[in-house]
Length: 119
Length: 108
Image 1 (tube, rainbow over the protein chains, first blue to last red):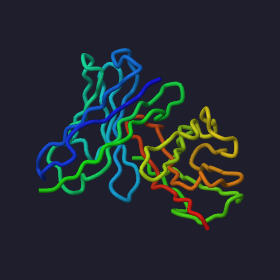
Image 2 (image 1 turned 120 degrees about the horizontal axis):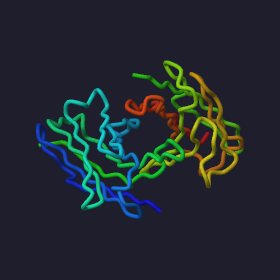
Image 3 (image 1 turned 90 degrees about the horizontal axis):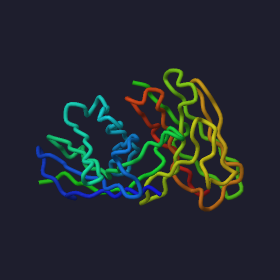
C-alpha cells in the first residue's frame, strides 16, 4: 500500500523559497505514476499546485507557474516542491498526493504539512 | 481554465436526511469528475471517481451521477460521520486540475 509523508520547514520568510519533500513508501517512484501537490489556505478550499508525470513531464497551476518547480528524486524515492518568492498568501497546509491511473483520481494523500510565511 | 462551481456552499441537515450537492463545470468535462470528503484536520479522501463510481470501502449511501457540465453527489441517509466538507475535482485537462470551492455539511 502506497503511503506518502510530507516534510519541510514549517516557517518560511517572505520573499524566500518554500521547499517541501514527499517521501513515498510501498512503491518505487521510478516505476511511474503521476504525483501531485495540492494546498489549502487556512479556512479555504483545495488548490492544485501542480503535478509530475512518469518521464518527468511537469504541469503547473497557471497562477503559480512562474514560481513553482516539482521534481522527482528516484534515489530517495521522493518528490519535491519548490515555491519561490513566497508571500503571506502562500500560507497553507500543503499535501502531496498520488494520482492513480486506475481511478484517474488523487487516491492517496499525505497527512499534510503546515507552512506559514512570516518574518 | 475550467471552473468548477459547487452549490450550496454549506448546508445544515439532520441525521437520516437525504443530502444532494451539485457541481457545475464551466465547459463539458465528460465524466472526468471526482468527489472527495474532508474532515477537519484531515487530508481529503476519495469518495467517487469517474463521476459515478464508488471508491472501494466507501459506504453505499453515497452515490453520484452526471456527465458533461452537471454533476451531483447524494448521501441517501446522512450519518454522524458524514458531517464534513465535500469537494468536486475535474481532470478533463490533467494539466489543469481544478477543485470546486467545497460544500460544508453541518449538523442541524
